[in-house]
Length: 438
Image 1 (spheres, rainbow, N blue to C red):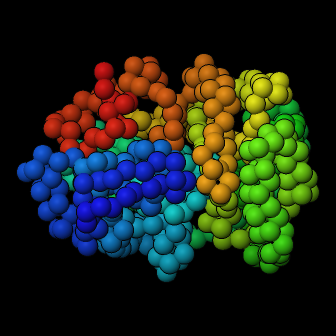
Image 2: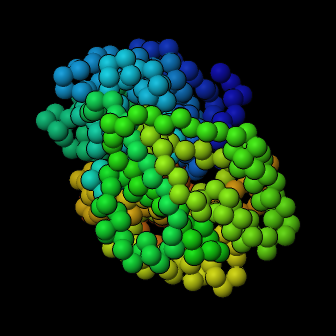
Image 3: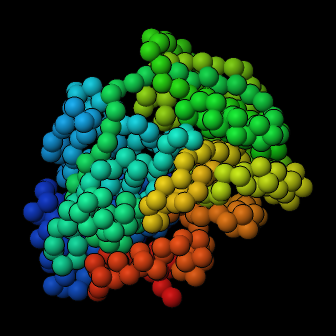
C-alpha cells in the first residue's frame, strides 16, 4: 500500500513509509524481505503502535504482522505454547491460553502489544522474583536480512537468542516464539495508601512482602497508592462499577481538568490531590483473573518516559525528584508509577545484571494537545542518569551509543551480532541509527 501514514497510539510520532504491507503468512513476509533486499530498501516491523517513541518508524517498507498470529503448538504438560510473532497478548489472555488452562506469568500495564513487540522492547511487569517478559521465552525463530531463518534457544544459536530477547527489531524479524506459561491463576490485590517516605523507608520489606508489588506516587503530594498482589484460590469478587465515577470523573473530567491546567498550570497540584483523595486514598481489595489485575487503564494520550535504576537507588532518586517537584519550577502530572523486577542475563535488558526499579513519569495530552513538560523531563533524566539509569527501549530517551556502551557490558557484542546478521542495515531506522552509530 502506498500513501500510508503510521501514527503511534499517543500520536506523538508519525512516519510515511514508502510501502506498507500486511502479509498473510510467513511465506509472504519472506517474499517482502527478499524484495527489500533486492531493491536495497529498509524494513521495519510495526506492532500495535503503542510504543511512545519512533522505534517503529521508517521511510522504507513497513510490515504489520497482525495476520501472522497463529497458534503452532501447545504442550500442556510443560505449560508451553508456540505462537507466531504477531499474536496479541490480549488474544493470548482472553482466548487462546484459557482453552488450555494456561496463563502468562506476568504482564505489563497493557495487553494490546504483539508478543514479539513486547519482548523486543523489554516490556515488564512487577515482582521481585519475576523478570521482564522476555525471560519467559523458551525459544524463537528469527528471519535475517539474508532470508535465513535461525532457530534460537539456550542450546541453539544461544548468543543470537540472548540478543534477540531484547533485540529492538535490529537483528531481524521474529517469526515465532515459544512461551513458558503456567497454570491459569487468580490474583488477590490489596490497595492501600501511605506516604512516600513510609514506602521508601521500608522498601525491601515492601517489595518482598508479596509476589507483585508496585506503587503510584502522586506528585505535589507525599501520598502513594500501594498495590500488593498474590496468587490465590479465593473466588473472584464481584466488581462494582459506576459510569459516573469510573468514566465521567475518572476519565472525562480528568482530561478536561488537565486541559484547563495547560492554561493555568498551578491547578496541577490541586488536580493530583483531588484525584488521589477520590481514587487512591481508601483501601480496596479484589480477586480476579490474572491478566485483569496485571493490566490497567492508561487513560488518554500522553508523553511518557521510564527508566530502570538499581533497586538500591530507588529512595535517593524519588526523594530527589520530589525535592525538585516541590520547588514549584514545574508541575508534574499524576501518577509516577514505580515497579520492580529481578535481575536477568539478557544482553540489552534494562534489568541485566541487577535487581531493578522502574520509575515511569507521565505528562498527559488532553484532547491531543502537544504541550510537553520538558523541564520535568530534563530534571528526571538528569537524576536517573546519575543513578546509572537505563531507558525503557520503547519510550523516548536521549541516550546514544557512547552512553549505552557504558551501561551495558555486552553492548559491543550486541552491535557485532547486529552487523553480522544485518550487514547492509536493512532493519535500521532513525531510532536505531541514533543509538547504534558511533
